[in-house]
Length: 189
Image (cartoon, rainbow, N blue to C red; front, side):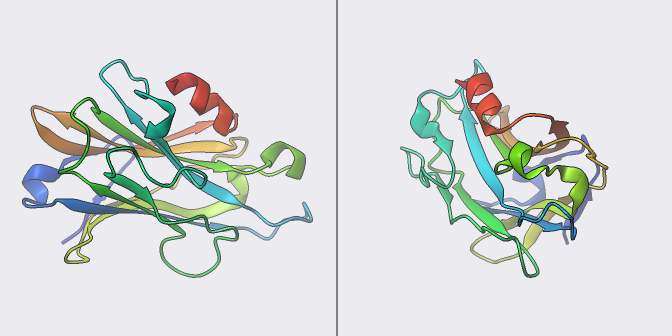
């Protein structure tokens, strides 16, 4: 049975899903009809951080132009340019057994491509969520529905996987930012 998390909620994956080795991270959203005249293109990105809260190298920044981490533990399955349809819009797989030991945290961020020039923000997005499921059994472990109204923000940190006491855990973050993908690259590099 899936555990629904609230903003800031945490789950110990080692206890709630013993034996979980390969996790699917599904991210989803729906764009409202707007008068901006252009379609929304939301992009999921992953930052694999060391103990210093920085990526060990640029290859540990996984996104639509770098779909696999150097340790092959994180794989981005592709960019959905429209977000149409039901279910996950973008998916990232994480093989917890392959994550480089130097990586202590994996951060999942969604940004709106060209948000400023298209006059778009997360206030025009609804039904946003992040969920974790076992890719072997396809059973959902946890889900976080982002119910907040991000009326100005153009980027949102959906959640993070982190290692504590040798166990993988997940935190539902739901933190909005009025910035683009580049600001995260600068923050974590």
